[in-house]
Length: 507
Image (cartoon, rainbow, N blue to C red):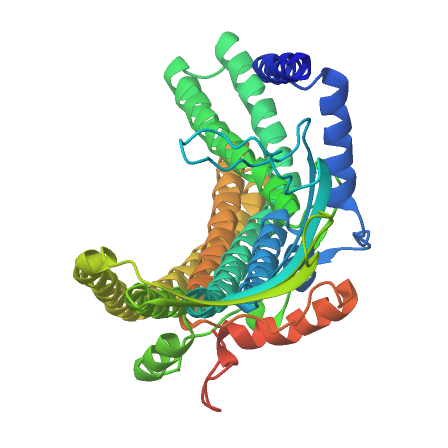
């Protein structure tokens, strides 16, 4: 009795200690030092194995650096690797289960039994003992469930489709990343080209504004003429400062996309040829439609989702069948009272959830509805992709015309600026007119770059809709220099030459 009491006390104390330990768990925020260590480690990780930037940054190298070092794109790669890992882990669910068990038993009294006498009272003979007070057991068994195998098989097929879905999502991320890099590159190129000119023009305008205010104060000109002159200068200054503010963020955005640390100085090298002066699309719309239906990442994802839903229907039907389980186990017990301390057991068991038959029709209907929903989404995505092809082609044509118009406007403004400068030298025009002409020319050049960025953005959207992206293989196994060379080749082709007819011009 004393042993039982001590055991109960020990058990109660142990349980109370565990409960108190569980209740003692409280939120523990990171300390400032711990957060600083995390930030330092993350920054070192993000900049690890990065090739230093050497020389001016070209568009091809910017795209290559973004594909290789952009953190969001790396996250997509890890998501794809996670899906592959889940597929590999799911395959083991189809194997039989091998279970090993070890047990230790200790009791303070003998495991005795008694038999009643004729009056139902315990017999006077000593109760026989059937087990040692202390003994151990062990067994090693193998079991296999046919139903679990079937469900695991279909689950593995679904995981295989999820791997393909992760791949399509990574492709879409590549399309978006290339589009953002191309747009940001041209915005940064305009900022680099216009920064000095904008600063010089602002300085000239500020000087002219100060001269005009002194002229107004000295009554050299009529007050109304001086104020109109100042207003024009202020309008030009406001325009120039708006341009300056717009251009200030372009380089920061490009540096973020290629994972350069903020504040890293770099210069840009503008491309030439088709990348700088894209041409019209000559690929027929029907061919683009066929290409998009075969390669579009969103459409491929919906197709795999429909296949996953179809497999889910088979899983729902499989659950309605009986389950056949096979098992064999080798056992051992150190109990000396056993005749055979080691033995083998084999079993065949059939189980059937009869109540599952009642819910079977409902489960089948739900699974079939899920298939219809997935197929409907796939059909809707097909129509959306066809619409996107026509819309992207129309947007590209419009952007190309706007670019040609912006170039023509900039060319006219340049010639007007030359005339204003000649007139200022001949003292037939005022400095304010030259400043206004310079402002207009700067604005025209900015709009030209913006139009060119819009052309490249539209081209990237069209390529994403068609499912075209550079085929670069494993990003971890290729150097930045080799990747840049591949991008230089494939990006020019992806702009419009890639599955186009031989007589087609690049985008």
